[in-house]
Length: 556
Image (tube, rainbow, N blue to C red):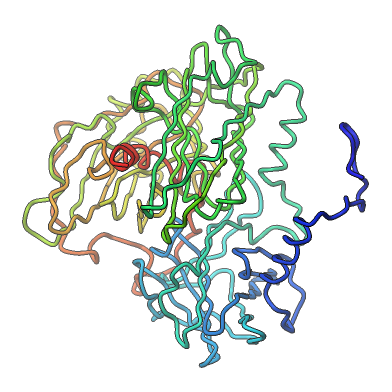
């Protein structure tokens, strides 16, 4: 029998299987890769998709990696930058040639063979009953710019490593179609787990009597079958969705928990949660602040224990969710009930979260083109944010940044932010291969470890674009452009936007070509491998989609 309310099942107890459960079990067994003799027992396994998985163990200074997929021709794996192929370090195996190739990608297309060095070593392979299996090994740390390192990612607050996988039946690597997957893993976690996960932290919060939970999900939303991509926005008054709260009091949001509909999870590209002051007829009445986003492989987000997002008294009054659906094969009859839980509390934490906007948050270049009519189509904008418009008037001597979101739109190619203390450069963060279509933004893993901004610090932001022969202007829509770096910090200060230095602000200048963008990855002449692949942090998919939804969604 099933347990009654309040009754717990024993560790090894299980309810009787109904017909639906038996059918699901048979389907899972059919989809699982056929058994192949492996050279070792691996510490970790990650199912990327039905019939596709990776296994790995870290032994000394090497990673032992096993790829399996329901395919007969080839299988590939990559350490992603933003979350897709652009900027990914790739290795692939071709069964007919029975060899592996160390490669990389600078665009969504055929990977390029690593010309610096072939760092992966072949161990074994098998092709059994339509499933290809390959085992290989590589040093965790390598020395060329066409590879990425497996740097420490074992525990929070460092985010998990984004990865990609693809497979096919052709004799040599080719376009994968829908035979692809992406996700996030912690390569350095101890055998059997060990590191606390986001879900475990969320579970601990739920067990706290001071924490309340509100669920926000769609109810069988019909995903459109006449288009491959769709944006859906819904705005809610917080007083309507948090009935346990008293709007006259202040509360802190402390975590978000993803609730993904298993029926349609493969069609969710990402979703973005923003907070603002009110809802209008077409969503949030003014541009909201991105407070969380979900991407494949993410279970949720937990704010640092000393900070929360203020709502109701003295804080946000409305919340908006924007969902990006991906239906490339135009499947009909898809109904989605995905959403999230908001975990919030009236026991205010020591600090309100602040959002510092640098670059050109005030859109001082509004409606100006991002390039001249002539040239290669590549251009560069450099924006200086002096201390006098930014941090000089802070009450606190310093603040702690715990997350960031580097944001451009569709033409964005690369972004770099430099932090200065006086004339000294103290920090540089960058995205080499920005890809709006893959994630809508970028959150470097270095930020999730936290860093300080001191009173008097200044910034310089470079945004690189490619617009081809098109005339694209600065603006709010996803078919226009932006150059903003959102820094999430505490304690909250009174200035939230750093204005550009108008005396030095100039229109973007022409760049001869992609080779002059200053990229660090994919350049064999540079020394040292690229750093840790950026994490799919809670902002890394965010606000760009908000503007694009209004452009695409209004046309729906």
